[in-house]
Image (cartoon, rainbow over all chains, first blue to last red; front, side, top):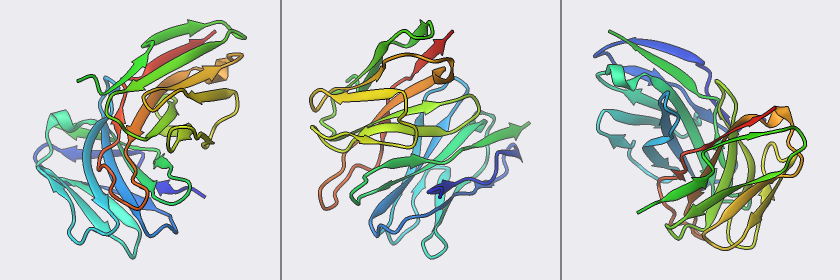
Length: 115
Length: 117
C-alpha cells in the first residue's frame, strides 16, 4: 500500500490566487513527520515546510501553510498569492520514527501558475 | 558549508558496466537515503541507512548495493548497469533521534544524472 498519496498529477492556478495541493498518508507509527518539497525544472529539491505528528498548530512558512488533519491523515499544502516562480513539481513526504525510519515520497503534483 | 555532496553529477555507462555513486555529508546526520527519480515521477527509495553500520532495502533495491562507509559517506553501487537504471539519483540525509528529537528538514544532494546505453 502506498504510504503517501498525491492524487493531483497536475494543477493550474491563476497568478495571485491561492492553491491547495493534496496529500494523504498512511502510517501506524504515532510519531511521524510530514514534509513538502518543491522541485523546479532545474531539478534541485527545495524544502518548503514541515509538520510533526505531535504539533498542535498547523505549520506556516511565509506564503506556505500546511493544513494538517490528523484524523483524516491528510497534510495539504496551501500556497497563498501564487507567483509565476511557484510553477514546479511539489512533493509530499513522510518519515516515521519506528523501526523502518524510512523517508517516503509521494508521486508529486505539477503546479503551473498562469499569468 | 557543503551540506550534501554527490559525485559525479553526470555519467554515461554502457550496459553491463559498473559504477559507484558517492554521497558525503558534513552535517553529522545519522540517516542517509538513496532515491531514484524517473522522468515525471516521484522519488523512489532504493536503500537507506538509519544509522552508521546499518543499511536496509527500500522500495526498489534490485540491481543496487550500498555501503555506509562511515557516518559521513553512503555510496550506491550498480554492479551491472541496465538501461532501466537510467534515472536521476538523489542522496538525502536527515537526523533521527532514538526517541524523538529529529531535524525538521531532509537535505538533498544536487543529484546524479545517469544514462545507461
